[in-house]
Image 1 (cartoon, rainbow, N blue to C red):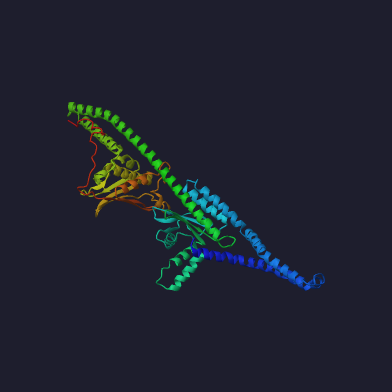
Image 2: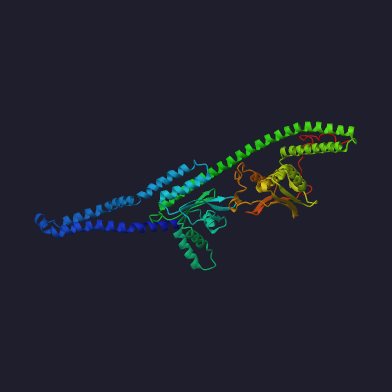
Length: 520
């Protein structure tokens, strides 16, 4: 706690206690002076009659004894009076201490934020309480929980470069609105050329009706802060209050870090499980592809044999056999693509033909595109530069974006446009649809793990998509207008010749050979 805060709050506290202290002081020393005076004035005749030589010493002795006992009585009574005045305060201090020790057991961030605001607001008896927590993706402090502050919008946030955050990081201490008012007035008196951060912070606190800002730090990093309103009793915050809130902030920082760790751990566990499922699916796809390949080979071979034997005898039979052979080749091509997609992706990147990968992805998604009655338009130049990526992972990204667009447009169908063009050292790919779009409230959540609007969705598709693009040195951005459509913009770095490549497995190691030897 800063010396200025302590001095200011001590002055506030003792201003509240001064009248009681003065009354107690006057009462005690009134007794000290009144008793000897009464003895002297009313009992002087009786004292002279019984103690003629030392009668004047008796009132003096009483005065000295009372003068010695008065300070002891004063401080004893003062302690009892102060205890009565701060009894409720000490009660909520104990409650806050108990609550802070129990925070560490809560593993869910949202539940923890609600508990902190509810406990502080109810126990201290505040008019309002708000908790802001740092969001790394947005690089700002977002309102997570609020009590009795109806005028605060739920999307309220404070930028990382805001004067409030800068002052908290510089002071690493609580901010009191009265202290800021004095500092703001001092800055105003110094002139226009001075830094007016105190004035800006004071203005923000006044707008949200906050009397005190309690920051939570972890290793010099500001995790979040509490904005506390005034007490319903109209009493000021005391030095004991500040000490309790400082301890509470430290406990809250530990609890928040703990909850963040467990949430990340849960996300990683789900991703590991999902990876295991995908690996099992890859093995299953590999086995199924080989099983499908066998009958395709027989069908194609028998068709070619009959075509060679009876060619020219019946034009319709020749056409039918050629159609069977072509469909077998197409089915074999699809199984090869599934195998290539199911194979584990190498850890590094290579030069990838983006246009060919898009066309291959559309082939794999062809059934879904036809099912959803989607008109697909591809606009990509033939000489598009190769991108620095991983073909399997990039295909996973494209399939996810294509299938999401088709599912969003639904049974009514629509238009899906894929376009790409070089832009400096990058290639820009756009995947656009004219579906229903995404609500503005959900735009910032679509890349969060487990967030989904589908009844059967896992909420991992776009999260994994973003992670893949970022791991390839690219970016992905989202634009959507509700009722008009959605556009994903992917930027991937252009492949530079001479860069190190990764050796790929042999071409036939996991792929089914093409059935048959082609028409004879």
